[in-house]
Length: 112
Length: 114
Image (cartoon, rainbow over all chains, first blue to last red; front, top):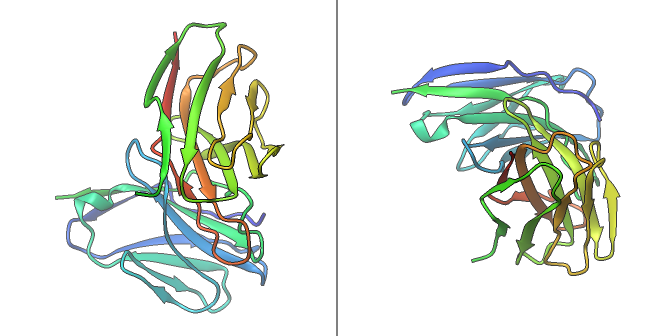
């Protein structure tokens, strides 16, 4: 699996936008970019995924660079409940029922 | 409500004892997974199963065993051969097929070896 690189930690003020970066310079054309997040003492939960185009859902937006070597998860207005570890994961098309490969992710702290 | 349940939430065991962690899902998912998480680390795969009566080892299977006799259940046994079993254990499930195949995670079991 292609590797992803994320900052260890980031901090944000409440109600401000947060941009969480992920580098994946060895991404292949058949790799989707997935984001999961893990709230304290809970299991991870799916946030968003994309292939080439930017994506929006009720939780977040995903901005994908034109060369696909990096992406950014955008939380439009951070709340205290968004404090979590965010994982950027690459998944090959058709490999949906195979295990996820987790890195250490980015620990997001939200300050009131 | 559909989901994944893990029990117990906290588990204590004495060194040298085997212990079994429960994982049940009512999502009708074919695939189930067990991950281990140590403090400050990401999740690591122990075992996974894509169909009943079949399972594959993950990256850190040594000292663990699983069974998949029913679609809904995927129990994990931590044996005395696991040298450092204290960790947070997470079970997940997903459908098998084309598409997103989002993984759904249970709330986890925190195992402490005394």
